[in-house]
Image: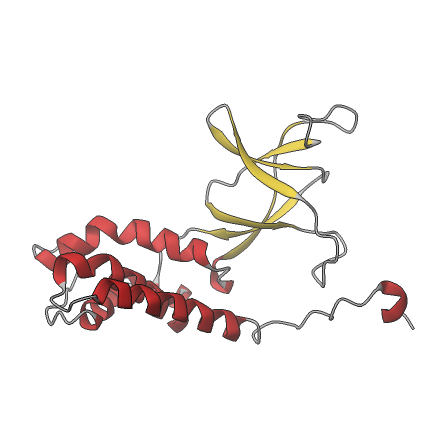
Amino acid sequence: MSLKVTAVNLALIRIGVSNTIAGLDEQSREAFTASAIIDHEFRAVLRQFPWAFATKYLDLTLVSGTVTVPVNADWQYSYTYPADCLLARRIVDGARRGHETDPIQFRVGREDNALIVYTDEVDACLEYTAVFDCPEHLGDELFVDAFAWRLAAAMAPSLSRIKGMAETAYQMFLLSIDTASAVSSREQQQAPQGEAEWIAGR
């Protein structure tokens, strides 16, 4: 069973619907409702939080700008926005990840009907959240929990008989994101507390 079908069935149970689905293409009201919204909701949950399993790094392709000629009045360079990028998180510092007292500035914009990453960083590398085809083993329980609550909030107006279920489900979605954030902060090397270099070096 795919991750998406698992999340849909969990969402249906949460909104008080006893009929579950075996696939999104089956002929049922539940499957029709879920298939109409699931890709949008999946991408929205990926954008909501920097999930570890969806993290990618990519050396960006320069579009325009040089050391002496900026791309515009605000930025020195523009780079191609990755095709699978859902959320641009940060431009990677050559000093490697740590407490960034002065993170590299960037902005996502649009040129010639395509998304662009603007920055003053030469040879920019982007850390970002990537969209993927959602095999079950790539997700985690906290993501499935959040995804299911968001689906529950979206499907409740059409399928649930419980008054106020959509609002309740969305609040549970926000709580699940808070839980994911707390757990994620423990599942990585802790950054320094941000002391000035002269203090850290004593």
